[in-house]
Picture 1 (cartoon, rainbow, N blue to C red):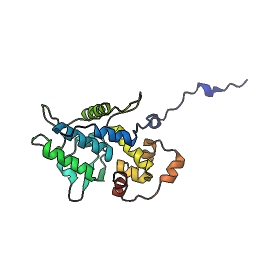
Picture 2: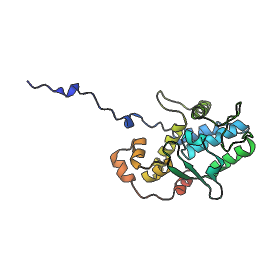
Picture 3: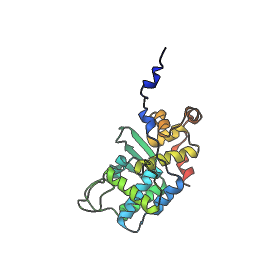
Picture 4: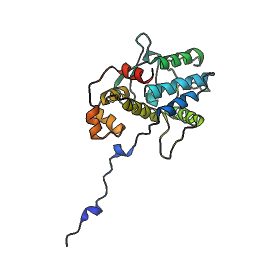
Amino acid sequence: MTRDLSVFVPPVRDSKRDHVPSAYPPEDIERLLAAVDRGNPKGRRDYAILLLASRLGLRASDICQLTFDNFHWESNTLAISQRKTGDALVLPLLNEVGEAVIEYLKYGRPTIDTDVVFLRHSAPIGPLTSPTLHSIVTKYMGRAGITIPPGKKHGPHALRHSLASAMLHHDATLPVISAALGHIDSRTTAIYLTIDLTQLRTLALPVPPLRANWEGMYA
């Protein structure tokens, strides 16, 4: 009698599919931002950081290494070299984001001889780290009363996922979302959003200007 040996074959895991995006709905993102007290220097810093993560989808590592030279105020753009990939990324600097950064620079940032924008506000004063940004996001999620189910991420990367999800629900094409996230290959974005093949075909359309997509979402 022939035995079915397939039952003894261990399942093959797709590590990219194991990590389900931890996106939060837009109303949670707004509650998160509203939870920040912008009446003090640290609050102004945190608010600008949260906007960069939630409105532009910047990674924590890229926020930490932002310098004055990355901000092109004359063209209202933010230009960086992504720390994770080394690839260049130019994003529209939305008014809301730019104003928050300026508010922090004028009325919140400690005076120190460094071009790094976001700093610790307690000794030793210096650049922030990615774990610190994770703590900042987690703190305000708790303050906002946002429910975090077991296993769901709740740091800066979750805000990045949330932006991608919001763009998808606003009918942004996959290339547009990829461009916003700094992904060279749209298939990476498809995995990021756990998009199936049918959705991928409908979303693989030409890329319109990025600014138009953001301004439509946050008008």
